[in-house]
Image 1 (tube, rainbow, N blue to C red):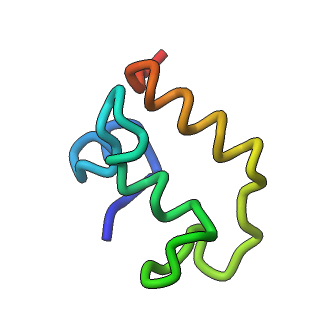
Image 2: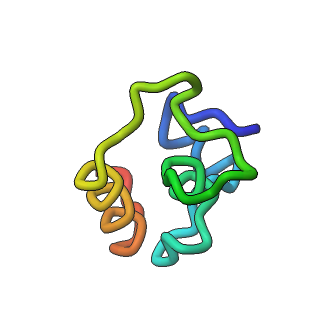
Amino acid sequence: NFVVSSYEDLVASDAIVPRHSNASRLRERLLPSTPTINRMPEGGPYLSPTEILVISDWIDQGARND
């Protein structure tokens, strides 16, 4: 359980690991390939692979708040 309504919430809940999208719980929750985890957003519509890639790239680039 983590809140994604603001950058501060993402950081405080450890949902993102800057420079490590593969270790970030946010990315894990967005992917369709993680069957044991509830996918976000709950009930859909889910993000496209391109949108997930943009978020992953942002995390891998340091997840800056700018």
